[in-house]
Image (tube, rainbow, N blue to C red; front, side, top):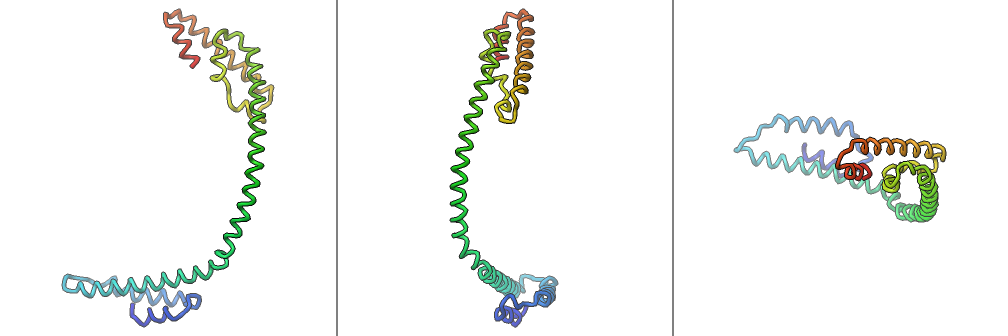
Length: 187
């Protein structure tokens, strides 16, 4: 790339550049470098060419950054104000979210109490192991508002029946380690 082309880019605003023409000229200029062979004897020439290309790159990058800064100036002036508005909205949204989360948590706790009461009423078949098995058998989705009472009651009954069958199978083994096996199952 010769110095004249670099100077012409320096003097013109990037918005007036003819990019197709510049690209064509740049391709022609770079073709010379692609075919150049540098040796130990021509290392000074290689360094000069490298410096010329670095200068051209810096020129183009500087023009790009200047143009970007001009384009971004209106946005940069508004950004703090916009962020302040968003912050105000987010603060209020967060307050409402806290209320919703508190309500949801209270609803889950009420539902957990109802589930536990139903479980306690039905889990007599599990005997002394009923209390230990509650947490293991509890499905977190039962606490969701979308889970109907009938649905979780059916699933609780199925879970209790399965656990009772499993415990009965363990007891029928007549193993000297039956208590350990039951403890392991309950855990």
